[in-house]
Length: 264
Length: 264
Image (cartoon, rainbow over the protein chains, first blue to last red):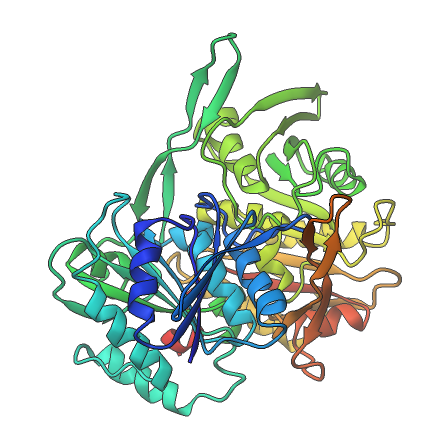
């Protein structure tokens, strides 16, 4: 089995190193990762002057870095490394920081997953709810193995909620038109994990605090910051609720931006 | 009425100049646009060193440019210019190039629209299916006026298809939870316009051609190119079908990336 790995924290981040080690137990790993931090790059693409360098090769993996975004990494992998062939699986992360709720639309980690989905590749993004560059991923590892196994089987047979049973029955009857763009956004809490929940993207927004900063020459520039504001803190079926109650949140995600009101 | 305008082709593009002229008939216009081309920037955001300069002020409009992405433009507008208040409407474009089908996930024009939707602002992206920097937008203009009027009224009462009637009845009964993240992706063909259709995002993918280019020093770099491959060319309810049959495509769009299989 051939597995493509990328991320947005760049090659060398603890999260991607952890993911490579886990995925080598499934098959041969090709890493195409940004050479520098590409957080918040969403699905941005670079039209020109993309570079690609092989920097490491073992029996189990080969590593390339690029000057591009996570989305560029997937496109370069498919067209330059795989020569138009597709890997059997794309995994992105493990991101240092949550990609639950509205974070997903800004996320480079999930941007790569969406390019995978566009190309019909089974694609999963893994994120941990901690920005700590030395974060502990060990509690997440057995769940990553289980989730990858389930996605490869095309099911999600976790012993958990009714949601999962319902989702499994849907997955088993989906035709290719109905599962267009299907991919997975997996977010884990820090600390003890109580279980896994199938979730939807929580409604909410970033309550921005744009800092105004004066530089040494008296010029002014701005710096984005702030915090997520959950518009439905009591809803128990969201990724945010799961994450903040000790559960791993698995959100079936899509590249179809058509609003639900069109379909229902 | 206060209207925020942005784009991804940068201030000075013919498309945004056209949109400013149209929107001045609705109210006061604030433009916050990139100073340079930001096509393909999706929802990318810049965490630091954002600049914002007022470059033009008349009775009807004020123009700021930034070094940031389209998403940054909306965040700077809300927090620095409007001081946390919201405009009554956000319009992005008119983009030089289609944002139908999978283009939407890479589009800076639609990235700005999604940030507007995140912030609860009525937001519309307008795009023309032509990359020509001197494209003719005149046939599109009366439709833009009509679409803006309908979105402001919260309806889409075009004399057109059953889809629109159905959508209108849905829109009239939506509660705030059900219309979370609702925004509009409007794409127009070049040449004669036969009418308007309410559409969904067409299934398909970019059939990439990544060119390998040797530079003067013998180094190699890569350049993304290619063309959209429509996976359902016969489906008449898609944005692609509408666009290629002479209709304006209005796709109700969303920032909720949860896959439809979760909801249905």
